Amino acid sequence: MPGDFVASTQEKYRGTGGAIAVVKDGHVLTESTWGFADMDLRIPMTATTHLPICSISKQMICLVLESIVRDPPTIVKQRGGGDIRDQLDAELKNMLPQLMDHPDGKLTIADLYNMQSGIRDYWAMTTLWGARPDDPFRLTIDAPKTLERTRSFHFPPGTSFSYSNVNFHVLARIIERVTGQSLGQLLSERVFIPAGMSTTSLCPNTAGHPLPCVGYEGDEKHGYTPAHNRIEWSGDAGIVATLQDMVAYEKYLQASWTDPGSTYQTIAQPQTYRDGSPATYGHGLVHTKIGEHSIIGHGGALRGFRLHRMHCPAEKTSVVVLFNHEADAGGAAEDILKALLNHSPPLPASITPSPKWTGAYLNPQNNLLLTVVPSPGKPSTLSVTYAVAPAEVTLASPTTAESAGMLASIAPSSSSDVSPQQNLSITRLRENTTFQAHRLPAPFVPPPSSIDLAGEYHCAEVQSSLRITSASKHSGLMYGAFSGFMGNGPVTSMKYVAGEVWTLACPRGLDAPAPGDWTCVFQRGEDGTVDEVTIGCWLARNLKFERVEKGTE
Image (cartoon, rainbow, N blue to C red; front, side, top):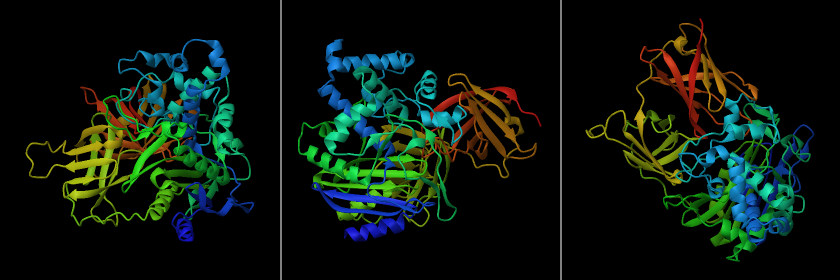
């Protein structure tokens, strides 16, 4: 059986190279590597090849956090100043004073590690600040500037979920300042050495990863090209490890699980929102289900790399998948774990969806675009695009659909109590959010002239400017480009959706996956001219840009 899923993983998730391992009850069930760490130099991928594990680092930061709370470093004890938790809280206030007395609510340390802060993701925001995908991002120069420009939340802290890497950047800096130790030293002392991860280290500079591994963008159809990353990160990511060391990590965690008081057991406890509703993310761990089995784990990504680990405590089984290309490592890990658990999802009932589903909608709470279409080749399934990637929901009736993370319903055409403009109900279970989405009118074909949208727009809050240009007076083709403290970003195309709604493409960014399309909602004044545009993506929502200059023909 192990050989079967190794071969199927290689075939289904084709790419430059990969490494997978399965650990069961503290023993290696299978370990396999294939392909190349460096295609040009023909260096093979091995179990001792170092790869960045990216956001899998987050749970290790939380292991450090729990460890220092239980056993503070000597300097913390000598300094006085109260319990270490109080010192952590005080340092949070020092780092983000502009958010401490915000009318939207109090920000806490727990909001950071549970992804409930409501702070916009700084990697998405770098696009608005004029970053190009291959630009450098420096921890000592650029990161502080992003925090200075973080002045509001896109939802009140503790009320919802939104992935934000800045949470863990801030958390790591707080830990360093309170303990007087570097994050790398703390990770080595409190995670890597105890876990037997003998060659794992914190490597904040993505341009300086240990050789020989290269990450690749692209695919078989378009070809593979080396990804040139030059960002620095520490806390939200930054750890590099081998498959061999990740196996040691899984063994360590499985052994820790037998102790109810272990740091791993503690950080793996499910979290809640302020209102008591259950949360599916906490301490850098995602909580999911495969059938009746509870699963905890996390993925990681950087341009050219995709990584994932999953752990099923009840079956004492863990899966690690490491790719130096951009195939779906999370999907691969889930496929392997489903095979090990003998899980076969039931076939959906044959249901014909109401034709009312298909279309484009706008969430009036945050001005984000949502689209619904039938999933190609999957009867009784719809594809809903709202966050970073499309999500599938299975029809429960012609007008209702559901998945593990979402409930959706469309008002039947005969309904008289729901406005035709507001007939899509969405509950994002993992985000603790329900909203009614407005159906956008059918788009004009061809798109209307965009010349009156062209010009310069500025967001004073985040100090970002957007320049929109039109291809011609009679064209619906537009382009947009952001500028800010990081420079002048690349020009990308805009696409008309409907009404006053457009999207601005963002296929690549400093981090991965990129923000995707930005929703642009234009507002007109009493005289009918455009004077403002609200811009956002799931990672960074509801930013208002005021028009400061009109375009010229």
